[in-house]
Length: 300
Image (tube, rainbow, N blue to C red; front, top):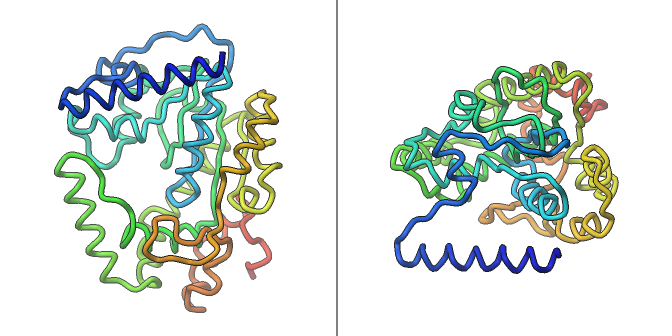
């Protein structure tokens, strides 16, 4: 059955590619749900999951993981980052997709049978507390460093409406003219602190229906990392876990600042940042680092 499903998925992919070559756009069932703003109720008894993470936290790999989970489970995956990205011309979206998700939550989210993710920014809509959640987070000090190299130099240009492309180019130009330490201290207050504190609030309001897994676990204890996620989803599939362990590749043998996946190392902030920058980060992020148990021993 699984082989048959994969064959039909590949056949569908080929058909879409043929239409794409002919400049004929056809929409998937998931895209139609967004465009028509109409939900189809699920018959599943599984509680829906929102998979929260951030940029620069192996979110591209988690995209692969969630797709694999969809193929072997009853869950339907809605990767709204990719789906809205594919429709932002039709919907005339800004780069902040979360505004659209929060506004249209009644048709885009339902409590049974679905996984939403990787969701790289917090959400805020009525009933969010009713969903089960996975938080996959990386030390914010490392996120800032990785974001500097990615958003400033290596991240692929988005295929989007002109507004998003212009924002991307403007941001890249600004970052490329800054030093790493300047960028880190600027972005700390713009999005890192608000995002991680927002995630704390979401987790606290989740009535114990949440799981936290760290980037360090993903790097150093990958089997335990995947086991925790699969147990939380009530899925038993050791073969897929073994496959995901082989597919994951968090640490690069050699740092390459020209590649999107530059390093992946844990604790790179220690060697990349000036001592005074580290001290300021540790002071301003103290509550966040303690809550999520990031490098507790590095704090005074």
